[in-house]
Image 1: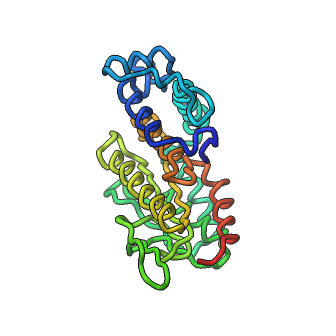
Image 2: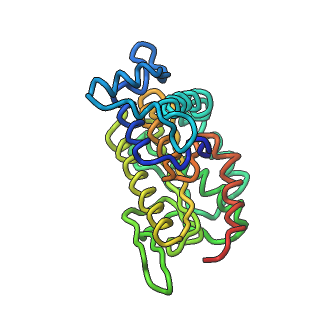
Length: 281
């Protein structure tokens, strides 16, 4: 999934409103569990109850729709796209295992296929990571990529480091020094609760995105940043609000594309193929 162009390049204060309103009004309906759809009246009432001024919401934002209408359009777009597109693509463990095993037999990969970090009966291949690694290997046709980086990512200029990122990524192309693309994978098959580790994963992706965005804004170095998430129970049943935050991240420019569940099978090879056309750094 790519960002909707209608909601790109909006100012930081717009996203301050989105976060505040989402928190105050709620992401989902407590009665049905479905994602909420909002009204103008709810938005105005929420801000006025906090003694915020609201007259500015009637003015146009960047010469287009009014601030209020843009907020309403985005919040309801977010609920609609998650309900109609994201949720149907999310898989459970058995579905992911089926795709993983099919690709493993078909491709006979040389890349690493790591195990998850659980123990006992819950220990198995990290299915989504394996799927991504195999599809990357197949699409690159022998070109190098780092499917298991053990070092921090570094961007350089004139043969000297200009940025070293805070966290390690799950994959880099072609390597962690001056990569053209970086990706993160958040798969949580078999979990029974929405733990702090899942929430922390969202905050980590925001940090990564901010660092990548800052590098481009101040050094002119573009690195494509992708987020891949899966497990229907974790994200849809327990974590709808965090899917909302991922959609926010996407439109704030912190990630270039986010893939949900089985979407990766068709879309990831298209993404990887596009890297071959990128100029050398």
